[in-house]
Image 1 (cartoon, rainbow, N blue to C red):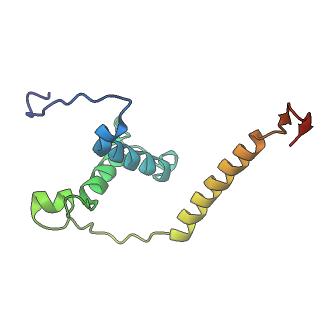
Image 2: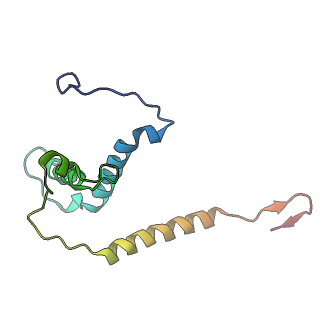
Image 3: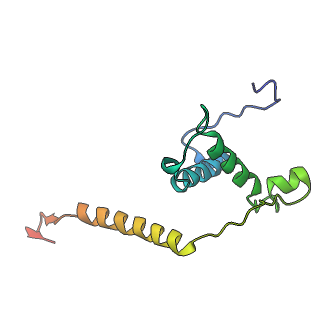
Length: 126
């Protein structure tokens, strides 16, 4: 497939995530979308349940502003911004609350793992 589309393969080490920065960013977008897309509530048509999800994620990736490029991929390809023909209202308060809840759970988990440590020299607990 790489030969057909004239894609150059680049091998990178799994120990160097900076070498995979672009794909790691795409994976982050996929993960965020997967968590927020509510796939469990969707009714699937046909045999391919991933098509609407991947279409939406691909659109999001193509319309994301890249600071290095100073443009979106859609602007570079089509010469203009890709506009979604629908209104979308973001519930920023809900997003912030979800993030704070995740932080609180993480803090509670870390704090529960901390136990009393015994100082062997003094024989005291701290």
